[in-house]
Image (cartoon, rainbow, N blue to C red):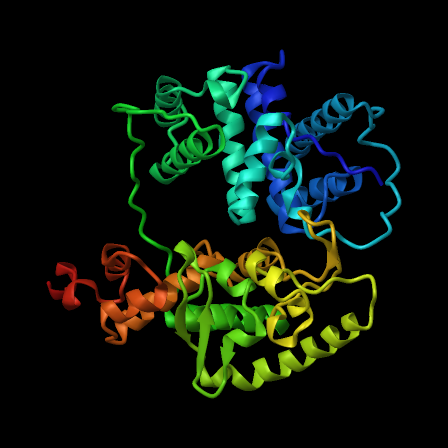
Length: 437
């Protein structure tokens, strides 16, 4: 089965002769399809596109005219993508292809426009510097995405030509034309300043005043304790244990999926989050009620681990680069194994080695979202809702806000204070005047 890699689809679509309304519709559908591929750990193939269309038809209870629009967008994506890469055109209505043999790739989440691949000399230099500095895979992805978008907007040919006026113009464009969030604009600024100074050694000087994107204040979605119980009842197996642990310790989804065996301390009822947001470590509570289930889970993981050790074609788990240099065999040490390993063997997108990675964030997030629907909750439940609920329930139970701040790993107390607005009785128990009429 041929996997389509079409990283510049958005740029080519924007420059196409299609009517503006049709281009916008295609863009939305293609991004939806690529997100679906990430959530289901698959790649861009005719078979996955067909599965996506059938899923979308059932999910949205869509009429045929709407399904035809989705098909037109996906058909454009495949026909144009294969023409760009020199493959023959694919008829979206052809007979389904046979499943691809071989192990699943754990970089399947990096399909389409977000796949990490240097396509120019500029991008090769950027990746080289970021990897030398040990930057995260997600950072590589986001910085390259911002750099590509900036180069298209500014129409310059080399990173050596980046100037402060170009950067200011791009930041203004993000705020005024795209109306991005303040965090997105700040990330773009950080990415481009890093690229200019650290990669191409360009001193930008004073960028000047640029239009600041609006910082939208959003109230977090929080489940009540009763809703949390209903939510857990809609899960089972490993996904239930993952969700319970995330809620019990207030973890970010990346912190949950990257936990290793040595991070659980059953004797002291603690788990250690290593290299969390901002590169910080912190301690979180390990619930007594989960210890038996987690021990049983680790026994099953150990069996898989020992079976992997007997295979000559597998490398150990991924390790931080400094540790891997000092202790080359630590990847085959039980203490460093993932608590939530993937069921499939996969290829490391950087080294090319075959290894067992941890479960993909998107796979778990999809399971959480579906569980919220099965539980009959009218709120939009995501994995981060469990973290929000953890903080809010602690505050409702009288835990000091500074303690909650430490448990969440927030740098500033202002970030934690948002949960005061969603407590069951915010404002020291203020009652609505309607209740006292």
